[in-house]
Amino acid sequence: MKRKIILKTLCALLTTSIFSCATTNSFSKKGSLHGMVTDLRGEPVANYSIVNGRKKIVTATDDRGFFSLEIGNTGRKDFSGFKQNWESVKFDFSEVPVNRLYIIQIKNSNDLKNEFEEFLRQENYYQAEKTLSKCGGGAIKDSELALYKSLLAYKKGNFVEAKNLLALINESPEISDYKKLLESKIQETNSEKGEK
Image (cartoon, rainbow, N blue to C red; front, side, top):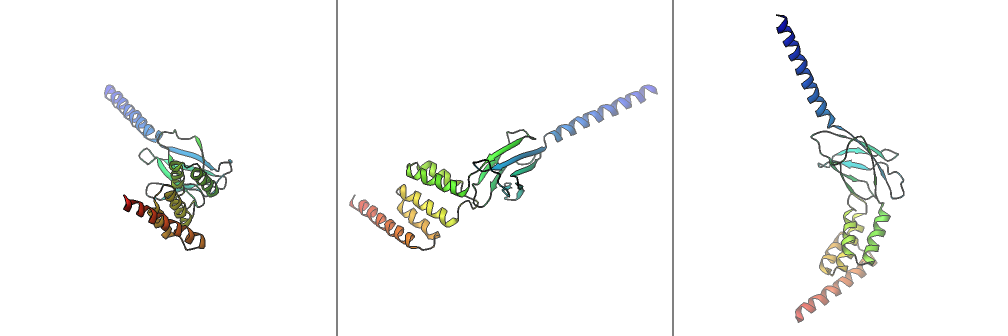
């Protein structure tokens, strides 16, 4: 009888310890990610939204630029961040340990515009296009973004595409002159093709 009681007690203790280890293991894969979003000068960026794959805001930075994000063992670990007049970024936390502070630096709209224009001057169209890809989420107004894309297409010699992108922009004297330039380039290109 005593042997049965001892065996039952041992079984109960063993089952409890196995269940406890399994539970602890599953919870250890969960945790909080803590980060800070700053500009290039280290100043905090407040109200910077972080969204999941379904475009649902899961957290945002506070007034000091800090954010906290709960990560589950089955949850996504890749997110996007955006705020109007700021660079849009992709966050991939799949390879980072939890409970550490991550500082992410982003560019404001003026930095992005200057970067794009400098790459255009250097005729580095690949980097210019990469800079434009960071301008989603309202970093640059849609009309300005369309103009920049049009200028990039023009520089690459895609005059028809450059003209089509201007459809998103309200007419102004500068845009009218640019459209006339594109029309003449398209006619020149068509003439050259016709001669060959």
